[in-house]
Image (tube, rainbow, N blue to C red):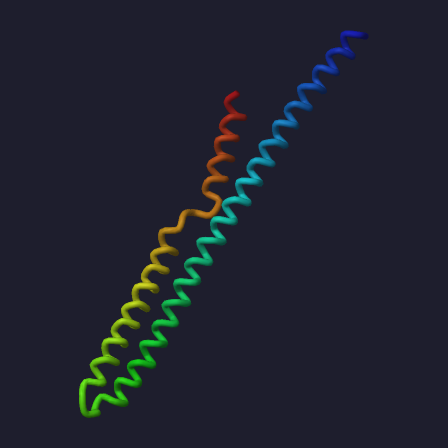
Length: 128
């Protein structure tokens, strides 16, 4: 009878350690998911900012182009100055747009590190 009680306590201890380890693994993975979510949020905010900046520069280019057309036939070199501004704004808009596009296309998979850690955990449990 003492042997049965001792065996049951030993099994419960092992089960508790296993559950404790599993709980710690899940907690670690959830923390990793939180970190990856924060990184993804920061990346998306940067891409959105670049996209908005590109749109702003495109609007400035259109305004400058409109003014350029309006004064193109005036006397001196006024339109050359506006043409230069139009070029600078348009180039800035293209740069921001391309950078935002590249940021979206080269982004890592969401939760990639977490998925890799889950794969390692699964492999470790399969091959003790």
